[in-house]
Image 1 (tube, rainbow, N blue to C red):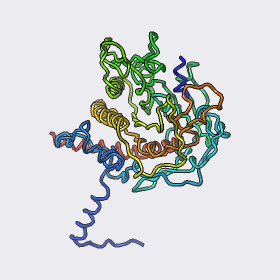
Image 2 (tube, one colour):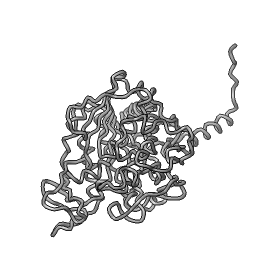
Image 3 (tube, rainbow, N blue to C red):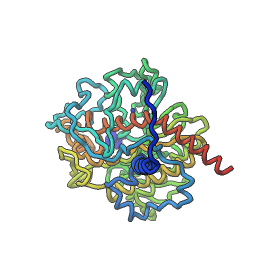
Length: 444
């Protein structure tokens, strides 16, 4: 379909001395204050949204009983919230180029199409309280030897996967082992490591299709979303995968009609007679809820689900189809912008539905993790292709692309996050198991 063009643009003995009791107590107190778990969710203390959350009616304060019931989100041994920080210069970057990596999608190949500046490639993420190692491709492949990973979502997810392929290319290129010609459902295999990576196209996460009876009020398509129905294009395929990276968001900004129980219940900017406009957030919440329900209902899926949070676009002076553009050439500082409005609302919906799914999944032994890329993405208005994803005279739907990310570019840091989380997974799993055993003993 023509409107897919928009989305085509997705780790000697020393004798001990006894310390005075007061000194020991002081040290223990200091340790308690410095190793409080900070990983999940970063939203809880991130400066970029903390004040808004305090006053946001969508974010209920958990009751004490709920707090006691929930597992710790991360172990006290994981000392740092890696998702809260700043972008700092990194003269060693980039770690690949558009000439050394064939996996770059045309519309994210910014250097090929004449982007004049290069500084946007020379930054790295610095958490406030620790260091985040730059992605190590050999370490990643060794860690995932014999494993599989699926990217489930829209083209920003595919953008992320292509970034990872380029980062891994310093060690090995994959071979195409797809079972279909459809490039929206491609599979790659790293034969030396028996590691498989796949992408599953599902821009709304639930069953959806483009309406044939109208082009919608914006003339960019009207989409019918079946909010209570699984998208079997991916839900029937993920049982075999060890890791899922689940994400969606940008397609919910477009006109949509919502179906539940096979009946129209509302829409988002559809302008259809007798159809209530429920807004973007309604469909967004219901879609994530259904996607999580699908995962938790799978009989044979034993993998870990990473929910990659919403990465805001950076259109200025207009929306995507009305002249909006992204021309900045440097990152924001964290005190120069904040997550707000609809972007904040969509992000919080993901956090809230993630928490519910995590609790339900735990009953079946399933694990959910939050890959919180939102602040890092928010601070990078300079990282998009803008008009440098095509030739000037090309007729493309998304002329100024402020949604996807140039490769090389800021999205490469998402692999830094993911590898660090994978390296910490054994430690976290052990802590969660310990907590469950302790809770069971108390209940008995």
